[in-house]
Length: 297
Image (tube, rainbow, N blue to C red; front, side, top):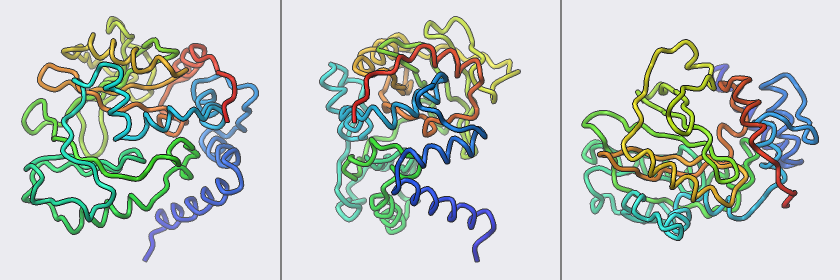
């Protein structure tokens, strides 16, 4: 029996699919109105979210799809001379049936290439149910997530599965990651995501030089946490600037593993371009840093 929350989610999913089918602009309007109580006016975009929504709809550069693809982005990173920052690749598969779990290492990560956060993180293969893992992966491969938020660049990514080595910085502790917000090839700030659990993480934002903590996220307001600058941070900054060069905006994500930088992913539409945890100051400041390009449809 469906719970009331699950029923609401199913109705919301169907409405999103219907609106996306009519026009991605209708879906954006629905999401923006539901989150903010205001209409999205593309012609007067000012905040970061508003400008990212505009770019999601009107700047459809093919390089976005390539770099959002969890497999194809690897060649982009290599072409930038940064292949040494990539996590070792175990394999790439067109279907879950191609995966020989017996041949995989004891610990690994499986990612779908055409979506965000559809991953299986396996820290102990002896505790993994391969049948359940294949069922999840095949369901994810069959899902086009572009209609959920109107993220059009995901629609042209071939659905595949990549297997990478399991990364660990300290035994039993989840990796910290560092998300560098870049505008026109220049890093502006870094969000440190620490103390990860199944329930979430702690978020703290520093300026690009890691000298000043910025009041950019509501969830960290009033926090006295002081996050140390990660090892190899300067390498992360340099890599982020190089990878971000072609884009008006991109968030370059990295891990710190054993004192070295490891590339995570490039993100063009964080939180589907509607981040309700971001403060007004952050929205205004980063909105001013983003100059919208000419339309590219």
